[in-house]
Image (tube, rainbow, N blue to C red):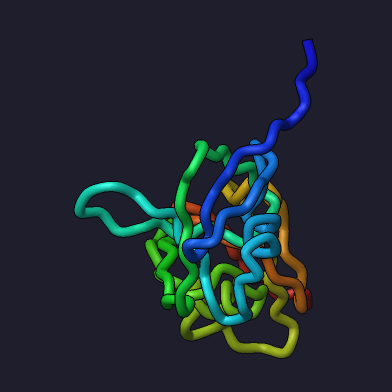
Length: 153
């Protein structure tokens, strides 16, 4: 028995497409030619908000004749934990500097202060690790960051 993907018919902005099942958000954005600055939304029944399909390589399972629509990207909020405190960020990606500022709004003074940033409970692409100055990382709700300041003198 084969374990290969099969094709299903879906609709993006009322246009029918054939898509592999499963697929990825990245593939759906390309298939539907979703323009920059727009998000793709998965239509749901009832009085619920249509969830955003992330433009990444996470697996998405499709149903025959499922509908999606594109629209202007909405500001999003992600609640993350930085040194034990809840913080809200409005971007999918955060930088080393942004995390340090969230951890230390009034940073320790001194020319020899070094920061160490580690994280856990991240998205599948980066579930855990550390950030170095100049780097950034994708976030998800509930992601945990630990930031320490040390004096290298």
